[in-house]
Image 1 (cartoon, one colour):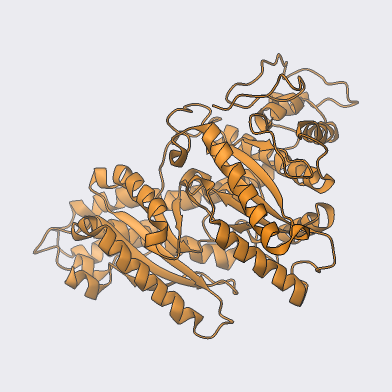
Image 2 (cartoon, helix red, strand yellow):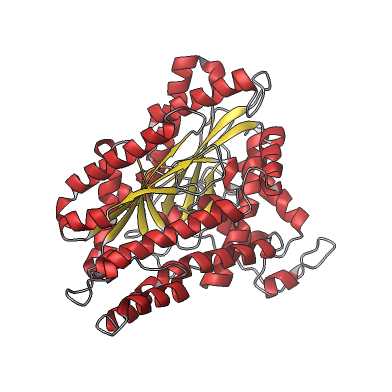
Length: 511
């Protein structure tokens, strides 16, 4: 665990894994001209957005409930596989409980051979994924699309008040961080560029290329901000840790060593900025931010940078501590305290825009702490991995729920093998140990504005699918790994399109 540099500044917060003792009477009246003890007595923080919490919880229940209904349904189907009219009965059951039919080619041989429950399980996972993709892009349940009022207001705040023309966040690929954007930080998904990597160790060269594309758009089209306006590119790394079981439920990529996760994330950020400055001179600087996420409670800790991007690695602002200290304050007093703590936490004077941005995400995270308190008894029961499928490739804008997907962002299986191997190892414990297959959704987004881009995306899917089959041949041969191939036009608000599957009739016959 990281040591806190409290000897340098007695006013600094300790981290959530070793909270400072506070003697707070949550029913007391704070002398701010108004009593806010009502909030605390109800277990509510005055800065929390409870209407938003209710809406987000309904979405979580609906999506995860769909996946969690698969095994109970298949148990019912297994019990009737030798009955008359089995195929029609199985289809009716699936339609009633999961809102889709099961395919005839996986059912109609049940009278002569054992029903392939592994294939049916994978089929149901893939159909459920398609359902949430359709829902996400067609009805915007998280209210974060680019034309939503939330996204428009946040983009204005980001550019006009904070001075950032683009926000680029890399969380760890661990499924316990898949909800980082829409839930933990409460940022509209269309307002951020998100790429997850194991250990939050993003590819520096690829990120430099994305920075170049961003600056090119500014130069040619004034998107997202005119080139002559002094805004910056903000790169954020989100590592994770466990407050309840730090030695076992921390980041696997760093051996549950929090200090290593922090230092590795910090170094990757500064290597990225150095790469940009070495290639395009110091005037091309980017701003950097390092955030830690407690996967047990969803509270964050923030390493506040100064104007030069320096941070104190063994010290941070703990939002769980801020939550306690501001619980009985008025909203205005709480916000003033947050801003003051941010400025005190930096090694030297921080940028004013960065202070505003951090203040915003800290306030947002207070809502998420209450979300976990209200709907998950203060900490998640699934402290470890509980993902439903592996997402491989480039895309998955529609995935914003904790422990739904393990991400393996890659162009080739060879370069992404470390991330993918971690995902397969996780699912050997989650699924294979129960004789269930590993569902893998392959995704490649493409630009519909570019001729031939869709065909190339489909070719990428086929290439990666072939490489997965070769790398995990033993699992594939036993029916313990199935794939769904999808593509999506990232220039349109459209769901993913299925272009192939290991469960297709012809594929099944060959298998």
